[in-house]
Length: 138
Image 1 (cartoon, rainbow, N blue to C red):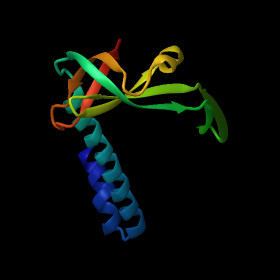
Image 2 (cartoon, rainbow, N blue to C red):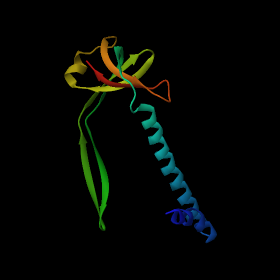
Image 3 (cartoon, one colour):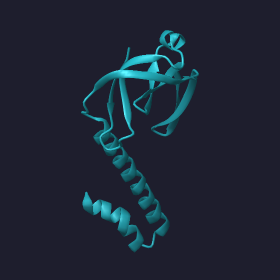
């Protein structure tokens, strides 16, 4: 595995394929950055103690229903796959100066007003002290 990685990243320059070598390095760096971002997020948010407290609704937002289409290659054919996304309702809740967005049902969204107090189960980030993760509102 290490030899293959070496050949992809270093060997292409030795062979004189500079364009391919640069593209391979860029791809490698993007993949490494994505992996590191996922690891940092997991360390920051997993297995943290949860708290219960009051939160204030500071904003409301709706994501309208929409469709997205992805192209999937199957054999020699490209197949479009369309996914329909339902309307989504979000409340931005502030607790102790930190803010998080939480998805709610339509009925709850319609009743909620900006400035209302909500009881929440939440946790804070481990690495990023400004992170707030709301687990549940009631």
